[in-house]
Image 1 (cartoon, rainbow, N blue to C red):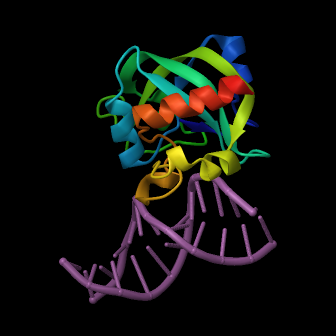
Image 2 (image 1 turned 60 degrees about the vertical axis):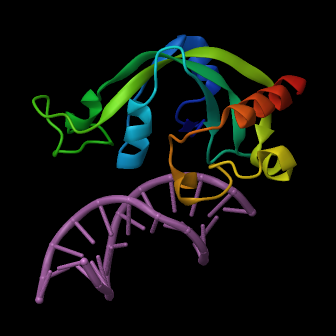
Length: 148
DNA sequence: GCCAACGTTGGC
DNA sequence: GCCAACGTTGGC
């Protein structure tokens, strides 16, 4: 799950404990959100950061439900096609799980042979703010992150 | 700021 | 259904 740290970082999540992952406005990303189950773990990725990379781990604590920011005209992600009666966009709630000793920079992910084939590194979904991660890739990144 | 790689929109 | 124009993402 990607977030720009200037907007919302892993440290913000540590402070808040949990947060609503709102603002997703891409159908494919939304569908991945809908596939999440309570207890699922997710990598928290800092995009548009210096450097970009995986900053930690969060955990799904509430499954997909309507994203109210979509029908708030004052919200930057307002989408008038979504209404309370017919919601178009969903969000999940996630809880802080851990912040890595040192974020794993994108450059390091690219350089790791065992991570080749990750959606994040290549393929159609690489730009999505919510995307799937294979378990072996997830585990490898967590190991790298904990090592610092 | 640039730009590649997408997705979305809307005319036809 | 096609496709041009436009918007977005996000690394660099």
